[in-house]
Image 1 (tube, rainbow, N blue to C red):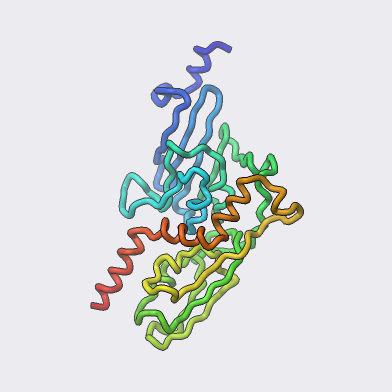
Image 2: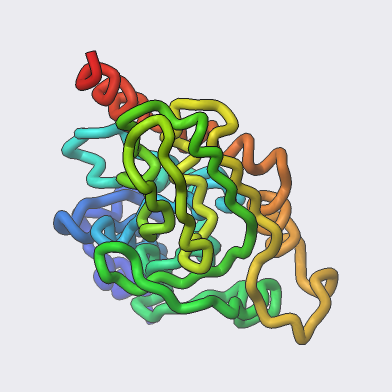
Amino acid sequence: MSIRYLFNTINMKDSIMIPFKKREKISDDKVRVVQRMLVHKNELMYYPKKCIKCGLCIPTCPKESRFLAEPDDPNLPGPVETDPETCFFCGICDYICPTGANELLINEEHKLILCENGALPELKPIKLKSKTGEPVDKILQGKIVIDASKCPEDCKLCIDECPMEVIEFTSLKKDRKVKLNRDNCIYCFACERVCPVEDAIKLVRTRILYDTEKEEGEFSNPFSEIIKKLISVEAKAKNLGSLAARKSDLRVKELMREKG
């Protein structure tokens, strides 16, 4: 096979240099980061309409390539974006995503090499549905407590932000009572991120649901890092900080304006 033939198999308008990487918006519901080499192509597909902003892919990305998009940026359909310069197509965002919003393709075939070579265990999710009716895999267990006595009157930011309809209030008044559908909680921290009162919501993750045929220590470093980044207290602080998006701040300010 000649070098000339290999080059002709690549879209030449994109192949300024090899390997070539770029991010491109294909449609409102499809964005991809693509890496092309001579006879190999990696594609990380992202489907914004499937994304529930759980944020699990952001702290678990080993290259910190995932980030929350700025609100109302037409070039970043978001809500989560990928830096094409740093992404190295490990597939962890695909592995950890509860809705299938991320998909790693290798030569146009869906593949997760880290699972195939035993570096990551098979996840054993609980099958749920989001409040919009989309399928969601619950891969985390934990605890959630809400102190309704601390809730500001008329505030329901946590209800609006929760993708799983976990939280119910008897009213929006100061003496409200709270009911929690804990079985539906996927422990994404969405409620804590938007809550304007410190410690009104307390949420912790305790374990990842995976095939326990092998001991945790038998898996390679990627899985140890995922556990560390999702379960530890330090990880929670970092996760809440990285996902405290400007959009959440704007919603809090909007509520205050409505009350004023």
